[in-house]
Image (cartoon, rainbow, N blue to C red; front, side, top):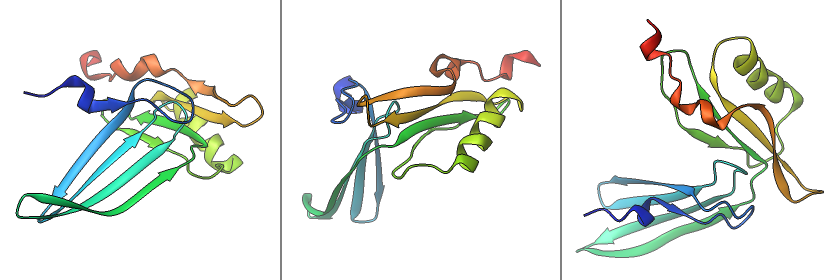
Length: 135
């Protein structure tokens, strides 16, 4: 039985309680990534498996410079993080998709001075509005 606490962990950057955990497995390797959908902080682990025992191959943690979610009209998507400050062109393109092209989602940027994320565009609450029922 799945324990719901295995699906998230507390962000070590902004303190958000629900950094999302994604896992992947291929042959005798697996990975686990925790990413904060608010500030973009990311932790990554890769394991190699031998006879049911895991050996840590790689581990990393990245400071987040922001996060975003883009859901195209009638579609689905996931969350993404910035691990370097995004360029003004990238910010402008995401804002245009959210404000003029009918995409749902949000864009946050990390504010170093105030040590917290700032909502730049969109709304995290739009994640439930996919447009599928608007046909």
